[in-house]
Length: 282
Image (cartoon, one colour):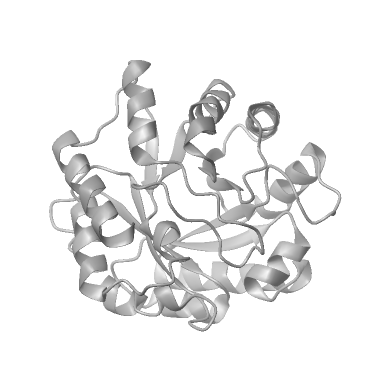
């Protein structure tokens, strides 16, 4: 069975025009009914750096969880922001955006490896105290455009570094759309072989023309957990690189249907969500 995380947060965060808070709330409440495993609903980060996420508290306060088994994930850029996320009853997962690239950590969080690991320690304690599940994602898991040394062994070493935080789920992010199908196969094959008890998710930044080849590569290497975004827009606005876009949910649904892979989504509500995403974000 495939697991899907829908990420309106990643779609919205780089948009220059502020999306009204009510529009975000209505859209996320629609997504809650579609049947996704997780909704990546917002982030607590610097509002100067990511002004689109400044209303995350207001959005969380109005999410309707009635009749839905979908979990809510929130990104927290440091332990102080993790405290803010943990204060919300509706939040299930608090995700720290770690990275294989120290340069990207500086660009994204104004941090470095040592500081980030201290923040992760503090975030783990906060999650335990408030009965939240911590997730640590790994950015730059499929390549590094900054000239730093990057290879499969480095990615595996980073996973080894963080796995002791009682992690059974680690998202691997193709932050710069540098993961060719070959690289995706290599990373997932190595990771699933080395760490068989961990469920690795893939967060793809990709053009639509390359998307299905990358899905295939991840799937055949053992990936059963994917991030998607209705409309396919988004990316990290702090990377210093052009935003390529996210894996479009409709592209993924089409791929699954052609390959006779069952998705536990309400197709009618998924189409409504797709229409709404274009209306508020494109």
